[in-house]
Image (cartoon, rainbow, N blue to C red; front, top):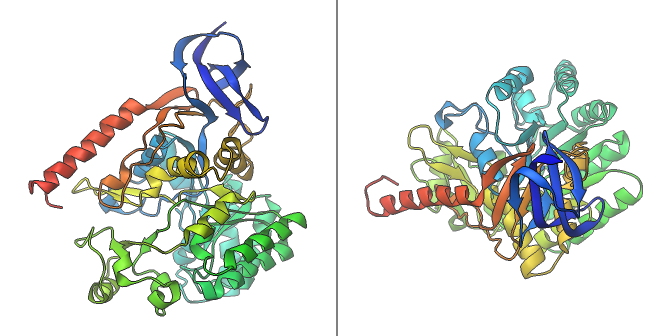
Length: 475
């Protein structure tokens, strides 16, 4: 039999079946038809010698916050999708941290007409729904507004959206009452809620997780704790929180979470995150804050600049360095209940063409496998791959994905572990540099990315950087 595509000579790892051996994959019409030790014939053949052949990576926590911002020149999260694709991601989940598109149908129609280069799913962003009803960030909704919010969530559920995301730190007015109401709706549809916790400083670390554990106990809803170590850190907080999560799962509740392998987080400077003496709360300095967008991009903050940017009408994106202890990141990503999620987002300025974002958008997968598997041996390869393939596929109820088995979707990532290395850095354009070692990415049986293409993209960015340094392009 002749297949549309054959992958041969690679070390095939499938976390669900515990397969880890030299095998060939035969693919027809976007589906893996056979996994075999035999030599296969194909119209196209990928020689995966010296490579790991993995299910396509699934990023359960990505963003498309700026999709409706005309200055970004895109009504869909194309730049984010491309950054993730170059890192081996074949499926991304947007709409996290309470930020999503509404109305749902018009946005989904736009995606249908302008498809992304990978599989895309989006959550219902609850904060965006509140904002659409004119509810202030710090205000509680009326009973009538809660009823309307429930109707909006049901609308999204009926369209097949996988769950609801809350950004409690961004909308501190969100009440327990409304969360319970929404969680019950989500439970009825057998979906899940993803939560950016209410606080992210050590004093409130355990309390902020207990708040959500109580919602789970009352409603039985499935819970995903977003970028956990960015909210829970310091002292023995993480140890206690992970013990609570383990206990909840042992009691039959479904409590999971995700994290990225970087010690810096990023958000808008006008966010409620920076209310009430943030530098004391989070134990970092003005100098730890790097400005990512706007006229002051690539500068470090000062007290004066911080006040100035907070008062401006337009929000400015910043990255806060040294914000998360590495030991807490290791604790999270080593837990059997935690997945890998980039919290990534990339944008491209419609006027200047500059690409802006956090390097975790382009480097999370490579950095995780490099540090946790190859360099520090914190996890075995199969376990690590499960956190980025099978586990998120199960959370999203995507049974054909996250697996290399006959009858499953041909979403495949092929990489060289010994060469794998992230290249993205903090700064304009260089944040999007693709990792080294991602050889091929296959989505739906089609080769959609090769390392050669990634090298070409990197050369374009490096050329732009040289122009800037020569003063021929304004930084």
